[in-house]
Structure formats: C-alpha cells, structure tokens
Length: 581
Image (cartoon, rainbow, N blue to C red; front, side, top):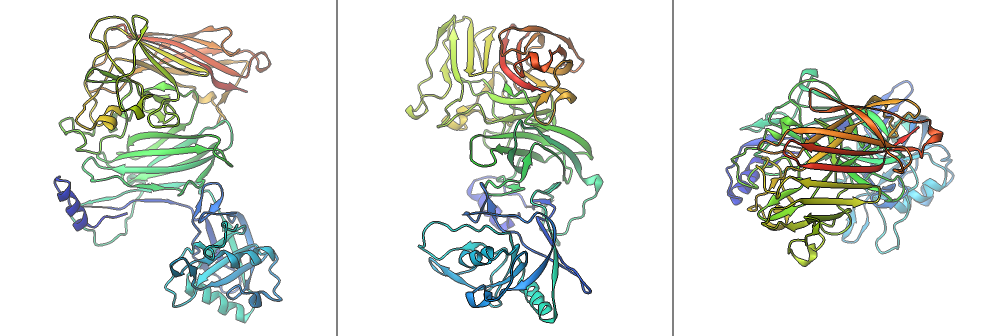
C-alpha cells in the first residue's frame, strides 16, 4: 500500500511535522485460495479471483460462503447469463458453471456483481461451483461481489463455491466449449500453509518499478506454533512501521473477521526486507468457529534485522497477569527525547504505572518468557476501560477509592495515591486467578520507557507522562512438553521455565531477589512445593512431578511468590494454569 508523496507531504504540513519523502508498499502473500488449469491437449492456467468472505461463513455479508477444497477435475458447462432459458435442459450436477455476469439493479442504479438470484438455481441444480466473468463493456473488475435486488428482504444465502475470471478468460473458455468438452482442474486451499509479510521502504524517491526481488538473505523465517485447547478460528494481521512514519497501516491474511487459519496449528512465515529500524506488530485473534463464545487477540512487537529461523509459541498456557512488552531491539528504537505522541512508539501499554499522584492499574495478560512473550487484551472486559478483574488498592490494609474521573470511567482502575508512607498493596482477582502486589514504599513514577503509552494518556491526553512502578511480574514457558492443545503429560517430571521480571523502564529496576513456586493438581485444595534453580539469564528452571492423570483434576495450578531486592513482592495464583493429558 503506497501513499502519494505529495499527499503525504501536505498531510505532514497540516500536522506541523517535518515532511519525509518516503515510499512504502506492504503485502501479505500466501498460496492462492483457488488454482485453476484447463486440462487436455492445449492446457492453460486460469487466474481466478476469490470472493470477499467474512466472519461466520459469510460472503459479502450473505450467509453460506463455501470455499473450494481439495483437487477436482470439473467439466465446464456454459450457463450463459444464468436466466431460466439459459439453464433449461442443462445437466449441472457436479459441473463447473461458466456464468457471464452483466450489470445488476442496485439502490443507486446499475451495479457490478454476481446476482444472488442467479446463484440459487445453479446451486439447486447440483453444480459443483460457479466461475463468473463480467460482461464486456461493463468495466466491472474482479472479484465480483454478491448483489441482491434492492428491498427484497433478508440477504439470500450463497451456498456454492464460486470465483471470478476476467472477461478474456471467460470468453476463451466459452470458445473452447464451442469446440468440445472442457475440463478444469480446480485446487482449493482455503488456508494458506505459509505467508510472506513484506514491506520494503524506498527513501527520498518514488521507485521506477514496483518489482522487488528478495532472497533468503533478505528474509527471516518464523515458525509459528499457535496453541489452543479447542478448535478456533484465527485471524492474522501485521502492522509495520518506522518511528517517523505519519501513520500505521495493516496487512492481513484474511479480512472482515474471516478465518485465516483453523487452530491449533503450526506454520511458517517469512518477514522482510530485514531492517533494524523497522518495527513489526504481529497480531493473531482467536474466536470460536461458529458464534462468538470467546474472542481474544494476542500481540508481539519485534524487529527483524538478520536472516535466520526462529520459533514462536502463541496462545501457550499459562497466560497470567503481567507486563506487556516488546523485544529488546524494538524497545531501543523510540527516541527518548521525542515529545509524547511525536513518534509511532511501540504501541505497548505501560503496566501498573504512575502519572502524577494517580496509580493506573492497567495490567497485561501475557504468556511466555524473555523475548518469546506475547500479550493480550484480556485484562479488559465489556464496556469502556472496564477491567475483567476485580481490582483494589490498599494502604495499610485500608481500601483506597478510585481517582475522580469522568463518570463514564467510574470502573477504570485508577487510584489516587496518598502522600503518607505505609504498606501499599494492589490486588486483581477473577475466578481461577488472583494476584497481589506489595510495594516496598509509596508507589512513585519510575523512568518512562520510550515508546510505551499509558492508559492515562488515552484518558487525559499526551501531555500526561506516566512511568512504571517497581511491580514484580512472573511469566512461564512450559517447554517442549507442552502440546498444541495446551496440555502436558501427567505421571512424570515436568521441566519448565519461570521468569520474574519488572515492566520495561527507561531506568534501572531493582534486581530480582528470589522466587518460590508451588503446584496443585486438585484445583488448589493442596499445594506441593516445586524445585526451582536460577539460570544465568535471570530465569528459573522448575521441576515438578505430577501424579497419574486419573489421580488429578485434569489440570495443574501454579502459585508463585517473587520479590526483588528493594522488597517489592508478588503473590500470584492460577488454579488451572494448564491441562494434563
């Protein structure tokens, strides 16, 4: 996606920022959803355009999207314009219907598209699919969206696989049919087995060509292991930017909430061109396959500056209350001298931060350790800045009221910090999880991490600078024993990694002093201590022995205490952190 330089320059002048002559294009590429090839003595490859499809199996908001799947040899039948007289006497069972589409009635006049009224009879006649092409002279482009006669009630279902061909390819097929039978080999791949995410930048000029050649040395390969305990519809998107870009644009594997992949799954992705100044925000959303009984988005913010192959674990359990972060390289990119809002930053939100005399208790929900950590939006529930957790703040065991904000934000977890010294505690609870942070002294604003934003800036504006407290967090990596369904084997010893850490900060945080860990296999009725051993990178190697599956409640709970040398402490319990198998 490119932005004309004159338009970008004009926008920069209106925003009173220094204009930059920069040309950038962005693609997410994968295997074509549908491939078609005419077989026989004179084979030819066709170039079908797949239709727009959306969440819950819709096509252009009509119910009944049906993708082509697998490989089939389909005999082509010319159905003309799909009128009753065109279909009379035709045997369409198991055939590919070649349909010429003219202009259709629209609310504001003639419109391009594939009329759903023409689809129904072809579908009901048993056709295996439709290959539609626009009538010559209509100037219609492909793919052809589904249309329906205005004011005719609810949107009618599609219910049959369909693609669009160019007018030239459609006419060529029709001419072949005039000379004898035509068979097309159709291969449907609804979910691409790989993706390429590419955003080359050209500085100071518009390139003479939009052709880019990238090799192995220009790309990084990321093997994505996307875990889930049940089948899930996955969307996949990526924002890519430089700090002085005027805005961010995303590319997606699917659009309008459509399923990009069905999880759990493993697949490779290649990212490039490699650039130490380019930041990537990768997001994957998971939802139920039929209706929105659950929905969650996980994110990672990272930089790709060298070729190689890495592995990432997404949606791995346990996910726990923690600090959203970015890789060390990504955190180094924002300019610490830039004014708030003057650069793109990292889009990462500060966790348990202070602005003035207010503690803003936004907390991330994270999974993983070190640079292999994703974070999600699960801290927030329905409503405007309304947490899904019960959040409370105490001084000397006396609960403190929320800070006075707009009444619409009455549930926002912001608390006025008294000036007095004392023992301050912050708690967050929901069913199956609770956390308690005890601060060694009155919470104060630490040195802000360049590029991070705070919920206070969303509420009060960019001029309100916030900084992280010395809150301690803990993350987990369950290692190779973790299955794609987020379970580990019962009846054996399990080795995994525990990481105590602080929120990203522009200053120095206290060193972690120690942790203690317990595990439960009876939903928290009893707890057994887990052996932990500190590693050179600041993580801990934990070793736990679980009973046979029949002697458990089917899951492992984790309880941890972690503290730093300044005396800040975390107590965190997840009753069912991950499953057993």
